[in-house]
Image (cartoon, rainbow, N blue to C red; front, side, top):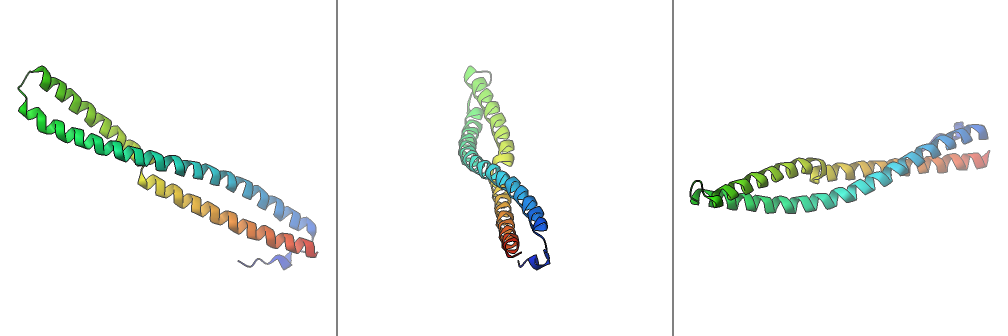
Length: 137
């Protein structure tokens, strides 16, 4: 964007704008670092969680198939039913975590990071324009 820097008539005005822009850049760079870290950890967590989820689905399917073949009241059936409850519970917890750390969360963080980086680039262009105007005064 072309800024109307010719409207600036004093170096004090330039300094005021540059100070505010530097504050904004500092905050945005910090946000960018945090989003970058969150994206990396979300990506790792999402991949790991999806693999674990697939394993739990297979375990639940296997137990669901085996339990009806076991005799009522036997230790094997009770243990299998307990294993099924635990696997189902772990799967539910993992699915809840995927909402916060899954692919949707990953893409949301990536979009936020891209938006932040675009804002940094725009403020940097603004600083360059104001700095050039200040030098011309």
